[in-house]
Amino acid sequence: MLSGGRTKIAELLKSTAFGTEVVVKGWVRTKRGNKNVAFIAVNDGSIIHNIQVVADVAKFDENLLKEITTGSCVKVAGTLVESLGSGQPVEIQASSIEIYGTADPETYPLQKKGHSLEFLREIAYLRPRTNTFGAVLRIRHAMAYAIHKYFNDHGFFYLHTPLITGSDAEGAGAMFGVTTLDLNDVPKTPEGAVDYSQDFFGKPCNLTVSGQLEGELGALALSQIYTFGPTFRAENSNTPRHLAEFWMIEPEVAFFELEDNMELAEDFLKYLIRYALDNCQDDLQFLAKMYDAELIDRLKFVVENDFVRLDYTEGIDILVRSGVKFEFPVSWGLDLQSEHERYLVERHFKKPVILINYPKEIKAFYMKQNDDGKTVRAMDVLFPKIGEIIGGSQREENLDKLRRRIEEVGVPEKDIWWYLDTRRWGSAPHSGFGLGFERLLLFVTGMGNIRDVIPFPRTPKNAEF
Image (tube, rainbow, N blue to C red; front, side):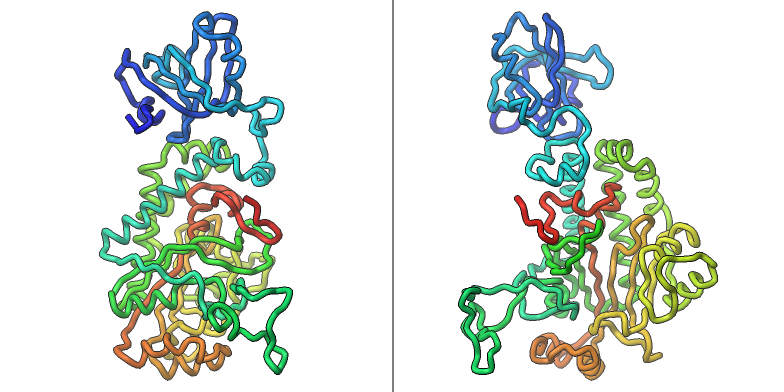
């Protein structure tokens, strides 16, 4: 029993306490019946399944029953009985029904019919009431919980890194500026540039693209930390794989080299997917039935297979020798595209792949340089259907090498002096990676568009709700 005097439908559907009086509260999915009896399907979001409420028409006011329509919110008191129909074990014989909120059937957008995912994005404030998004959001919660549980159980500390920052961790430049300056009367320096000394922080600031750099500082004191929070990219990308606001999980571990990092990534991903299989079966089965028949087999594929460790150079050779006509070119020095990554996973190895030792020119400045002078100790974890799901590396702990590299890529030393200082005083080998939470959810739910695994997607020209 919950506060408010109700029992969750998820609990009632497992109950065998027939003959007991119960109270449920929720939203009406459907109502059908005849002149003698009304069958009302009620859902409260605790589980994908509805509970059927059976109302004897003779015992209820006719006007009350008319107001019970799809979308209305009700409180039902009655007796829990064994269901005679197929599909669910129990139902409620209603003794009283109270309507909390009506829903005009002429204007309520979610009628009992199929709605396209594109249409549902336009009414994102209502889509959690659909079976699809109820399932996605319950899985999203389960994955967030599993992430915290995994790291807590493995002795990691949760570090809150800043959302407002003066540095660009990726060196990509696609950042959202943060300012309190009057945009209609921007103060200027004598040279005509924006005078940020008059801004709130006294310098240019942005929303973070990653908590990694600050996470490294935490790892070089607490040994092993993780961040889990929102990140922001101002890329003008209207694709099924990009959001302007998304969540990232970024562990950083001192005394970890690349091999340790790969072991952590594989163990972490397998734990999360196993957790989904063990705890979200009803929702996964619904999504598999509606959207992706191979979903559960693909999740088991990851859990049941050892990940292949593959050198980037060898991966390029495999792709070149494959004879496949890829849309994007393949040659040493180019980054792999999703089609290349999926070929390696789905067709060549038939296992998840961890690709390592990338050319330094296509990777970030902080990655540890190999002795060959050409490659860095980077790693990408590649999954079926979506390609890269994790990107990480061993970090460069040598101050001289790091300074030369940031000079090569043009990162101003004055912006990350504090990061360089950790290499001056008690530097240590350390590694970490980033897992995009929504990318993980795309894989776990089988949904085809990243906008459908976050409650309120932020994309170019779209910041509704």
